[in-house]
Length: 202
Image (cartoon, rainbow, N blue to C red):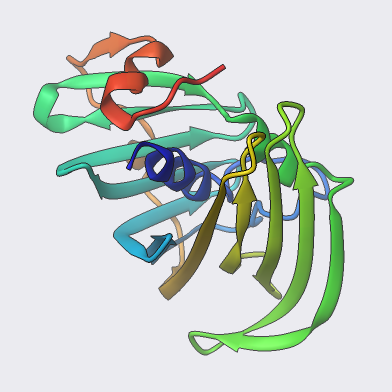
């Protein structure tokens, strides 16, 4: 469960960074339902995207958490409404590697995902800490990451299978309030994620 929580966080954040020529940041605003499957366990939730920022409302470890990601700052925070707490964190190293403009990506043709035409790519990236991600990404003509399927290999060799797919995509403006934490929250450092999500951020 601890390793799964780390991978879910990685998968949630894949579309966030706003890098020039990056693979995963869409230049438009939209909302959708996002399903992330980690080693056969599926996590469902709503997501909201504007260029450079993304929000995911996700149930994780029995709690409804809100992940808000800032691509420019390469960081984000988790809002735990039930605990009136917010935890700030930097993007994991593999996330940055997957969004590098120099990411190895090979076009493999076109496929339709939930009624939307996409280009399918083979992707391959290794983070400075040795974590390796490899698989496939389906990107719409408008630049939306519609589907992701691959394997993350930890430095010790443990492999975790990840799949992500969007459905019900709706383009249109999103309220700025969605990407701002509510007032009155207790702010905790990234180290607080260890007992809550089961991993330590570097």
